[in-house]
Length: 210
Image 1 (tube, helix red, strand yellow):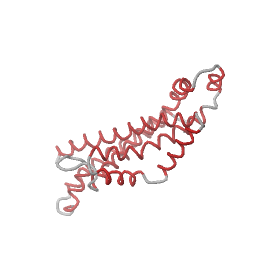
Image 2 (cartoon, rainbow, N blue to C red):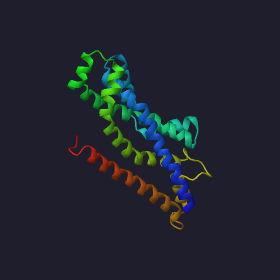
Image 3 (cartoon, helix red, strand yellow):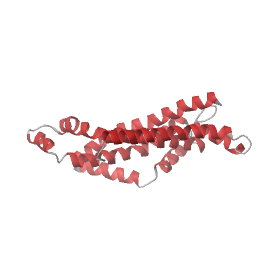
Image 4 (spheres, rainbow, N blue to C red):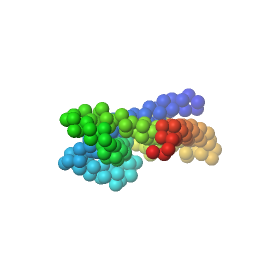
């Protein structure tokens, strides 16, 4: 049981990091562009984001996993697809407020290009909320990959995954409760730890709640 929980930790933690990293990797640049450039491309990005956010992320991931087949890597990709719009929405909102600052207007008057202003002035100033969101998202991402595994759409036997282990122990929960309770408790403790750390970092980086 201990060895499987440890192996499941590796798979679950890597899955959570994979989901939030690639969601941020896709969502942050799109949010920067949509927030700074309010033309046709920015409007298209905003409409796509609104379309994704109108449906529950887990439901979209389940549908994608059903279409392309169950599997650990398929589940990760299925979760990244509906996850990135949240980062785009966050960054877009931050950029819309930051681009009104005097130093951004000064850079525009000096003739600097859009990409220079985005990466030199906007990106460094939106990294704090992005980092906090990544840390706070690790817990829900671990739960999401565990849920897909519990439903048979993620990790497949004989691989060890916390969600899969809970599913394997669920039928005998009254007689052999530790099979499901131990990995479930491990998942709970890790998720709570990430949430506490994310909240502490948020208070440290933005003590005034900004």
